[in-house]
Length: 324
Image 1 (cartoon, rainbow, N blue to C red):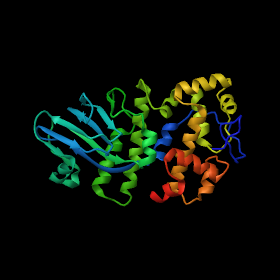
Image 2: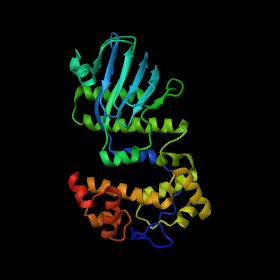
Image 3: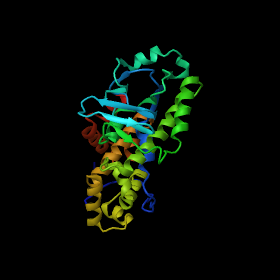
Image 4: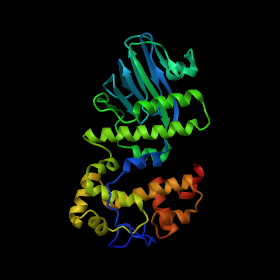
């Protein structure tokens, strides 16, 4: 990456975005980067003791309508209990086992789906002790790993009754209806609803979490949020430390110290990582040339971009694009 001594970014973009002052909305950008895709959804209500195993690499959501479940995550020493009006989100896709009623055999979720007496109803069992919504989804691999790294194996929200998550119940119902009916466009509907649910859950969790990933931690500080918003909105702009500090109404030294405290990395390092994340998305989803993409994310030359991309992803932009 070619950089001027006084700058942390070089760009051919002539349009200043220093006027950006609104609070960062990084949560809205998460679905755009990770490309969530809805997979399966059903209601699980076993009539008797039952354990269900869920394989690795399948992120999923458990929402307990009534009763209580116990989640045993592979590699984690302690089980997690989730009661009525609570939910558990496993974004990292860890293999886990859910105990719906103590005792009973353990069966795989695929076997559960095969054994449903009425698959079109999207419900397993008719028990009244435990009733839970389960939904699985997938993310776009490389970028999702980068953006979602730092999140815990399981996120539990326990106050849904006192503080309901807006649209959660109706979103789950629509997801079930869409997966049940198999109407045209159902996959898109389910994925967009999962986008909404994911953002709402992360917003609620971040509010009370003691620690969170750097990109999510920026939401907590309005000044750093301004800088993150500006970088996200226009990664190609010639962002200097002084420009970002002015945007945050701070001195250069105070801005750098606060940025490193909140984001756990220097402003320049964050900008470079964000540019490369955006470039990977463009390589995957656009037909633009590598030279055009390098300009769009703020590099002065295709060669400088290729060097930075190879250092970050371990391969050249063209090889990475072909592999997708």
